[in-house]
Amino acid sequence: MNKNRKGSIILILGTSLLIFTHTITTIYTAIFVVIFLLFNVKKIKNIFFWKELLISLLLILAITSVYTIPLIEHKLDAEYAVFNAKSMHATKEDVWENTNSPAEWFKLIPAPPGKMDFSFGIPIIFLLLITLITYKKVDKKYKRIYNISIALSILSLIMCTKLFPWKSMPHFLTIIQFAWRTQGFFILFISIVCGINAHVLTESLSKIKTRNIVFVVMIIFISALFQISNKFIKQPYERERIEDTVEKYDRIGVYNINRDYMPIKAYNVRDWIMEREDRTYINSGNATIKNENKDKLYDKMEIEVIGNVELELPYLYYLGYTTILNGEKIENYESENGMLAVKVDTSGILEVKYEGTIFEKIGYIISLVGIMGLIGIVFYNKRNNLEEDLERKS
Image (cartoon, rainbow, N blue to C red):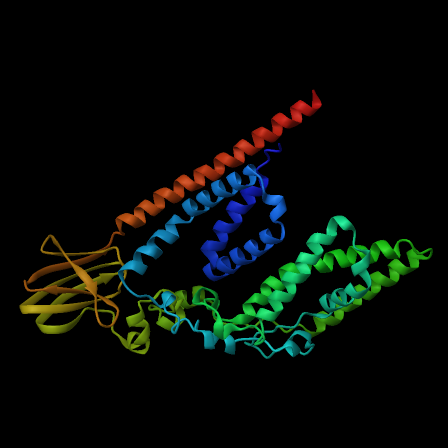
């Protein structure tokens, strides 16, 4: 049995990076992977496949724990925009509205600056049209993947449109927000179809007696298609990068950041958050705040209070903040505005600092173990391949 684990390494690394970059794409990738496996169920009926898959999934979960564990912890503690369908525009109606018209796929005129462009482009359209000629000529060893790719391409395109019953779908599917995102999967699957079509076409042309002339004509023709296509490609839409914004301004507003992970209470009053001063507010009670000195994730101030007072600190509510009054830790919680808040009834020195949660630190440790496990598999695979090479040579 071939014990080469190169495929497992690619799966672990690729899936981990996908989770870190875009969770929604990860969910949909998993759905398409399941569909693909169902098409190939006869080829996965062996223990080695499931053993490798289980090990890969465990390592993926371990490597991404630094992200997933704090995410779950915050989900259990409070409500954040990323988990709210309305704020994320992920309701059934939202997804249904954000669909494509098939006419958009064949447009040659570029979309205006700042707008999405869904055109396939001339080269892809050409390679798709020749399917009518190449389909019957596809070699048997490619036929299965060819047919599966066509089927998944069609499914991906249908999901881009109002033909797909988005209004009847469960939330785990409408989490995609914009139905046109499935066009990315169409591009993936159709690239296989176009590649095989191009291969079959060139194979067919090579049998023509005047093939040299035909190849020259084909090269000129395809090059011309790309040139024509490039003429219609719009110039990149330029907007101010967040890095430039950080360098230019002392303070970053809520419209300069990814608001998906804001507390939902803060998200709902984001215009007020924009205008909020970067200091501690007195929400209720009688108090005086002196000498407040805030430096990034550390804040220190003198407070004089009469009775019970609620102070709203200049931080969005996230777990991991420690609040200390006169050297003793006090409990903090989420205010009505989604900010970090404390209740105090004693005057003195109030300190705020971010230390992280126990689960967050556990996530770092598990991720480190997962990375070490991946490195171990890489070295094991290299050693195993070397031993197999030596056996073949001896």
